[in-house]
Length: 512
Picture 1 (cartoon, rainbow, N blue to C red):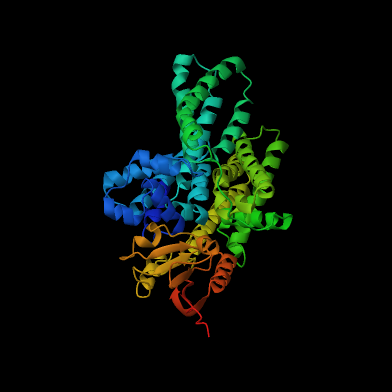
Picture 2 (cartoon, one colour; picture 1 turned 120 degrees about the vertical axis):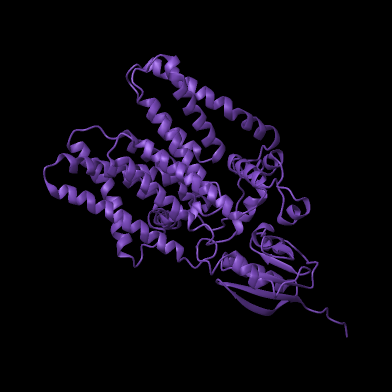
């Protein structure tokens, strides 16, 4: 019965996510990733060459960036095998990574009660923040899945009794080393999980010398697998870890506080706290329930769940990095999307807290505890469903999932106004993959930065695509265009909160 209910829950989650596959189209950051997974090619170049590039091209394209190569190599292999650049195909692959993440979380809590494991599925899958990342062609679902699996294998190594003779133990150790290496190749935020795992592993006391010798083998496997990329970075891409600078806000404690609150609201409730009593109740339950579960454990003189301690460590290590980077470099580290680095830790921490409640309800003769556990479970389900509803109704085309408002819709609205010989400007180069995939005659392209750095432009007229993003950047660009003797001649509302602004160069003054 328990296995059946868990399998049914898994299939429901997969079917629901699959039903969302075609609700949105390629957007800006996805377009940039298409270039990386295609070996540096734009959409126009793909049309000319007819192929998706090679693994060597992917390495060359990804190497100088702040990304890791595993996602892009995997995507490149899928595109070439399918002979397709379908966004739906790549989002389907992300659903498979979601399924892997759910399986990893189930294995992480395999010794726990069935309702605790179902609660884990609810927390991870019924979340608007997670749905947003799965439905975008980005590496985050892979990262979450591999982080959960590396943590899972870490605890299987930690909880191995004995340890047994090495010939019986080496497979599990090698698996843990492989999981660490894959996580390393998925995302640079792996370092926080690795640091937390090292601390947890060092808490092992029985047979400590033999355990550490076995652990050294696991780390040797991981080191052997990651060394080729480290050497590649050192030799070919020594500036890889520099992500550049794009957030020009002044780093203040007020901005840090507000940004952290916004990030965690995205993580917990997809930022629908205001005016949503259900989300408020769910958030209060999570924030109060975790410390209450720890307090109840201590009052009963039981050992704290090391899984919860591991989750706290991963989150604390990342928080420290965010704060240091925020003040030392720029506020870039608190961008809400980066809070995906907390997601696996949050799911583990919430599930560990619910496990305390479920265990108490199971052992207590008072039926009120069983009712409380059922109420918490149902609240998590209904709040999760509400989050996904809010996300699917999000009107902003880069993050939302309304079929009426996405890049596909915006691109088609642009076609009657912008011809192939004209020029379009945007706050970040559209990189051809973003709108080019739907645009029959792709126009010339300029970025706001190129305009701001120019003393003159080689075109008599251009269009600015205003998506409502970076309004200050847009305002500076428009001011600079005026200094270059361009004036706005036309404004067209193309829907989805977007506008086209046409600028034309004034005729030169004729001397009297």
